[in-house]
Image (cartoon, rainbow, N blue to C red; front, top):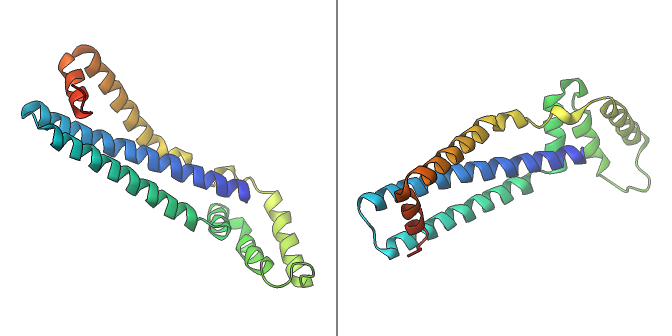
Length: 169
């Protein structure tokens, strides 16, 4: 269950980073296009970079809040949703296992935890995290990178616009 929780956290991190990269690209593309058509003063481009930094900070805080909410109980719920044959055993064992004095838990709680462990050991939790749902974002990022490389390679004004975006002379 701990490994599944770690994988869920990794999935959230990768998803958040991919989403931010796509958003940052479109912000840079928009500002670069406007700067290409109507050259902007340095202060406006600096404010754009500050706005992009604010977007990055907000995404990082959003990810941190979501990661904090993903407790062991939430991971147990995710596993139970992916594997309905477990019923609510993991969640119940987690909730009752944390109550009372751990040195001498009641026999019913021990039996419940042993049953949950026995059934959970027979289950493969590898498919709990839906990594395939990141394929559209990864494909979008791949297209963006190829497009950027082509533009940088064959159109010199793209390099100039990119340098101006990052306040280079």
